Image (cartoon, rainbow, N blue to C red; front, top):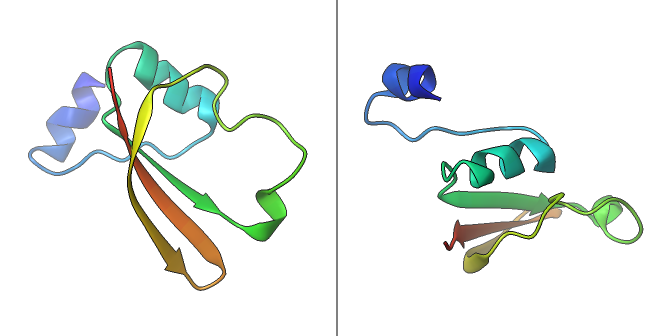
Length: 76
């Protein structure tokens, strides 16, 4: 993480991966926001988005063609 923030400078750092990766950053207190894009095929049965409970507050919801995009603040 330290190397990524050094390279990013004052720019935002995006972590792209699955829920387990996001959970690891959340566990370390290094996650500020979670952005989720929903496609119709992702609804229904399946694995949880995040492998652990995470306290979040919805900040924004927008539509991007067939996807719904949501942005959450991670609350401590």
